[in-house]
Length: 111
Image 1: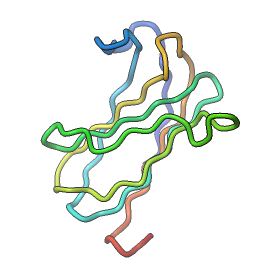
Image 2 (image 1 turned 90 degrees about the vertical axis):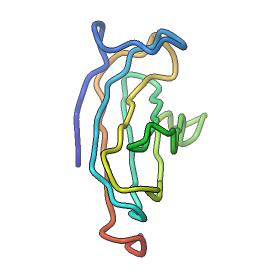
Image 3 (image 1 turned 30 degrees about the horizontal axis):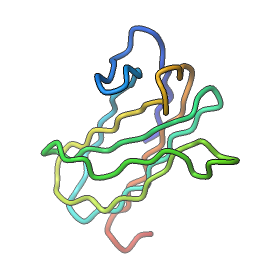
């Protein structure tokens, strides 16, 4: 899955820090390995993934704090169901276009 989007005024707002965010979902199977990247040249990305039972199973800020403020995660899915991805900025000033990519293995040994 590849999804382009924009963080902009009027999006959902996180109560914890007043930053805006978008939500994306994907279907996954227990034991499946998923590689997720979030890239933007407009803001410092922040990525969080929640399981079908609303448990935080991964979050990531910077690939490299000095040279790459994009986010990436590799996760082995704990259960089968619909997963929620939160596309966010590191702080409440982040706005702009982004590219979200989710690559799912067919089975745990594909990566």
